[in-house]
Length: 322
Image 1 (tube, one colour):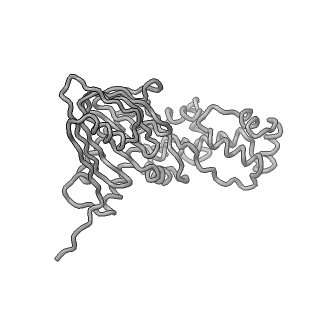
Image 2 (tube, one colour):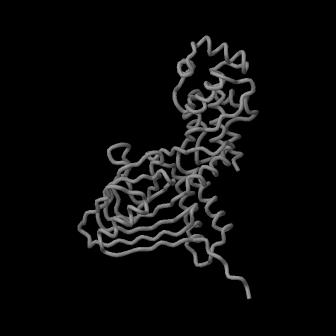
Image 3 (cartoon, rainbow, N blue to C red):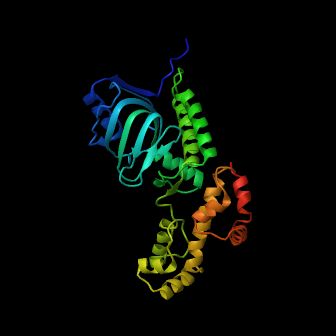
């Protein structure tokens, strides 16, 4: 006799036409608060099905009514899309319309409001630590929180890649064959990788590599540069943050690490550009848009300086992905 395979998936299903039961279910599933369902022109009914494990779940729901409330999505990273109905996410702030055909990420750093009606909605939930570990492996850093730009519209080729991956993942996760831990882990990792390539994001607190000789306020300045590299900070901002004059900061850098503060900050931003280019394919991103995002507006000078630092043109880095 062959051994019985253990299926790692957990399945949660519920349906009905009781408004209070629906409210309790969705508040529990998504850490929602102030959830105030209201009947619409449709005959009320709901259905919810969630399949997966602690690292990844695929959720599908139908809700024939208006649903208003607030979601605290900080325990997971979420991607959602609707096939019918719609509404608004992050009401009163950076509002994003949920419309058929457009996948969106939930704001991941704070609770947000929503106002939806008569939706057929799918949601992919990623465990935070899992997605952060996959991102760290991709970017060659230590795991750290990720901040997704939920208002950014992914590029069409990226959306097509995401949709194709979701179809493949659904065949595995929702299929009839029991899933072993390894099979589930592989499906989760592949889905997480494509998700990170699809939706614009930054690492909130990237790991700060050791800089030989750096200590005290110079080390503090380097950490500040890494944490704020995506912001338009200058040497003046860094000096003010660590309580030094600009001259004092420059002298400290030259004495301890033998480079200027401006060169250090510029190098950190070059490294961020390279990290993005290494994990995008041609068609998913362009060199110019990644360079501009990190403050390099002059394409010719940027390419020359990049080649001097890394020994290859940025376009070559992009082509070599994978």
